[in-house]
Image 1 (cartoon, helix red, strand yellow):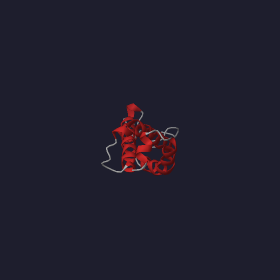
Image 2: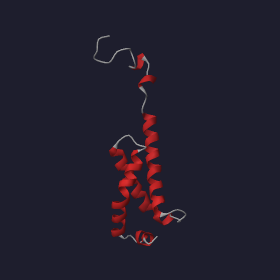
Image 3: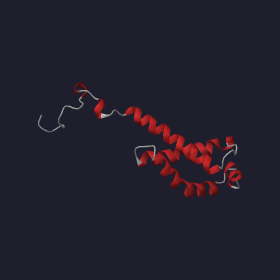
Image 4: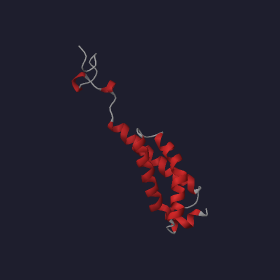
Length: 109
């Protein structure tokens, strides 16, 4: 936990180092929950902002790395759930909604 006091003190060098080291793994973890690479990148960025804003509330019950990853995964899960709520499966659409009609748009009926 040598990094924690430095992060809390606003040491940009240690924050940049952890960003460089941990972000690729956070990105891979986030990608499992969100639809696009861009959304995963946004998730990691938002996670780092949340970490920096909430670092004084870190209690040390887990490792700092675990805490940071958990924040990232929680944000990714929230984005993944909200994305799924906004999407509608094609099979759920009716003909009146423009749903399945037995042929693809642009093809002969």
